[in-house]
Amino acid sequence: MKLSKLSYAVVVASLMAAGVAQAEVKSSGSVAVTSDYKFRGISQTKTNAAIQGSLTLSHDSGVYFTAWGSSVDLDLVGGSEVDTLLGYAGTAGDVSYDVGVMRYNYPGANDSNAAATPDFNEVYASVAYKGAKLGVAYSDDYYLESGKFSYIYGSYATEVAGFGVMAQVGVAQFDDAAGFTTAIAPGATVAGEDSYIDYKVAVTKAVAGLNVEVAYVGTDFDRDDFDGTGDFSNTAKASAVVTVSKSF
Image 1 (spheres, rainbow, N blue to C red):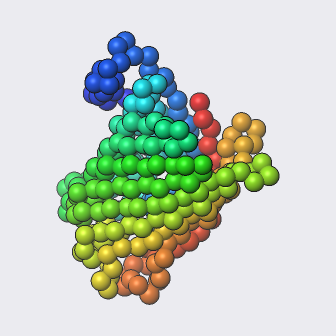
Image 2 (cartoon, helix red, strand yellow):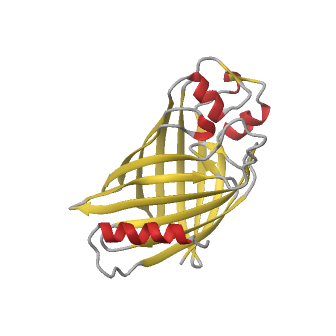
Image 3 (cartoon, rainbow, N blue to C red):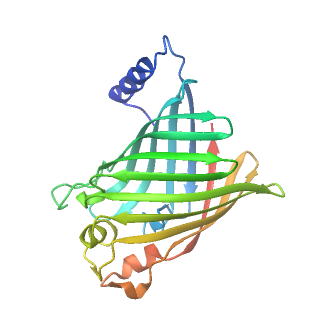
């Protein structure tokens, strides 16, 4: 994934602001194929497979810049999502932390057909301690200009008999039911919903230089909660997801 000149300039400026003279920037990345790209419990590909990739530039100071992309299949958005993150990560004893700002970009969005732009910003922060992690994200104008949004999640990861095991649960909170409907189920009739819970349990294993993850991902939605959203009923229901990735 090629970074633009502007993106590179942002990284360099950030490193200078951190007081790093002649900084040596390190790079890392990954490519992945997943059976279903689920974001906060909801499929972004109408339950179909996706190809994903990432590239991170980082410095020992803790400043980093990441570009992440995936194929998507979302109405009015097009076939791609490209996210950019500028953050700072570090440790204090056994506690690690991460803070930053993230931009969600949908280059294929057809603005002439969309009532609102899908691109949006989030600020995020997390702390982790011995496998346990607590994080939060906030947007003042979420996907499709749906208004204020917050997301709080907790997770725990460990190793059992050579396998990585992880469990996570999150709560997505919208400013009101209208924002919920706009962002989560456009065109649906929703009875006063303004939040939902998503969850994920996963097992990972390194196989022949690849990382294989088998996960079960879902939400607390009930098919009866929505009217006129047959497709959404499928994209929000719990299902198994298999992802194979390679880091470099």
